Amino acid sequence: MFYRNHLIKFSYRCFSSESRINSFIKSKLMSAEDVAEKFPEKVTIGASGFTPAGYPKVIPGAFAQRIKNSKNPENFSINLYTGASTGDELDGVLARSGRLKLKIPYQSHKDLRKLINQGKVNFIDMHLSHVSKYIREGMFPPIDVAIVEACDVTSDGRIYLTNSSGMSGTYLSLAKDIYIELNEAHPLDMKGLHDIYLPEIHTGRPINIDYVDDRIGTPYVRVNPEKIKGIVLTNKYDSSPGFKKPDDASFKIANHLLDFILDEVEHGRIPKTLLPFQSGVGNVANAVLACIAQDNRFKSIEMYTEVIQDSIFDLIDSDKLRFASTTALTFSSEGQKRFHNQLHDLKSKFILRSMEISNNPEVIRRIGLITMNTALEADIYGNVNSTHVLGSSMMNGIGGSGDFTRNAYISIFL
Image (cartoon, rainbow, N blue to C red; front, side, top):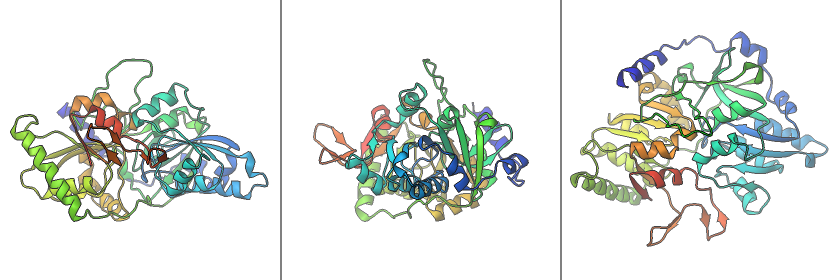
């Protein structure tokens, strides 16, 4: 396994750095406005993106403008499937169009949240590991259009994704028509970070991942090139919020957690080499990684998670990150620039997986994770609420916290 993985990693470093605008791309170039005119009025969209990472940034806005300019905006109806929450240029603009009718499987945008809680947008709060299976087995309306962000596209239908894998593989495989935002803000060296694998449906076959750095798929999504109807050129970073440094309280909590983990090691319940970490979004989770970077008792860290934030750079700078598997790189603008500048050195330490793999209960349980996720409230019996405020008002959704918490070796809520 070690030999195979390192051959693959070496081959990914050998991708050509020549211009990405090949003859196939030239033949498909369109404006975002022209793409928006192609969409049916009643449309189900499958979009790339997982958190504000790797999501389409110009086509959704053009479609919202088409609705605004229409003499009969009431004729439009949008079902939107994504990987999780995305940026304002997708979740926000379509929510504000007034014609969004269904959103799955997760959200965190204030405009969209308000419409959901008002009952104006239907929302299905799902465990993220379930989404691909439900859609592939026809439990939701079929996908008319897939919109994905990519750093490269080839004439034989290979689509190389950017900062997230999310649900892109599933949506591209099922969509009738495909439109691509080719984002030139991402270097071609992004090719090779991804490991795209879609499990067969209706089978009990195992997913052959034993270690965080195992690769079982391809570095691209393969589609029928005839389904690619248009390509829009962009040059925009993800609009991720700036990285907020953890406060003193977060660091105190983090140090208590690290003492607990080391006590488990001392009593033989965790191996001395530790177990891979999963870290959710939030100040305390970021503080844990920062404390690990500063603590000499921790030498080598692995991560198997769904989101990686700027706090990963603390582990990189302290030379403690051995490997990180995720489905999204949710960096600030500064973090995105740094990652691109150091991509040649960092590429061998990262894998971006499809959401149905990063959040798969089988893999999570086999690897044996220490998971850290955020809760809204908890009781003394171990019941945790991470979705609703005062019992009835949706916050964001359960997302992947249920996938990781229910199957981890040690589950921690913050």
